[in-house]
Image 1: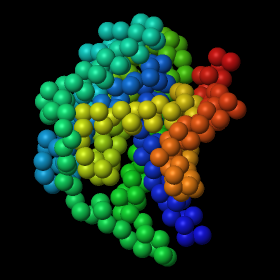
Image 2: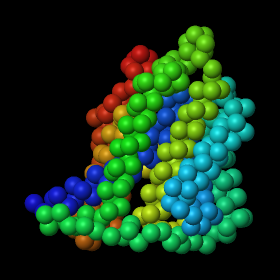
Image 3: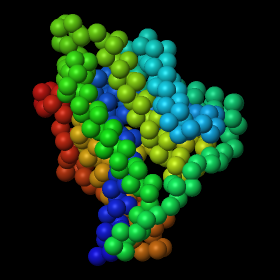
Length: 294
């Protein structure tokens, strides 16, 4: 029982981090029908912003990292994606890859390709005991931050005029524009929110790994894309569910596979993803736009 509870705690923590990764992808896809593979580089920018800012007080450090990543997301939207907004999906996809490679190589030019260590507070490596369980303080922080961001995003989308416009644009962008929704404002806001999510994910990821590389965003963006596909493209609740599903699968396989097979954990996890999509090709939660098209 203790072993199962320990794994459940780890699965919730990992699923929370994966959900943060996936939300940024799902939010942009819902409005622009764009899988933004440059979202991983926003996480990378957040990591290097943490390295660049040094050791100011924690509130200033967090605010600085989030502000830098949001600024990069807005510049990305204005310079790279707005000029090709009306192009076909293939052009948008190639643009996202181009932005991703550009930012990776820019990081290599500025910081070199060698990994860099980020010294964070030792509190992130501490544990506390609850009924025989050893729970990392960082795991609790990841879950709390995810809950806070999910609650804030849900409230923004449901309670604010701009959030309602974003939901309308996600359902039918053309009709929303005819009704007076400003496309530039809605899309820029979506990119700013994705930057906020990427910045928060970067802070949590660096607290977990304490290592920076120019390609550190590659694995998170693949996880985010897979989680979004599992949950249902264009569905924010689906992205969250997909993130938790993938996190639980990963932890369950790590705990249950024989030692000689644990090196192939990700292969088994993606095999399970394929099995899920065979039975639910539309994802676990079908977005309203997808139901309408069907």
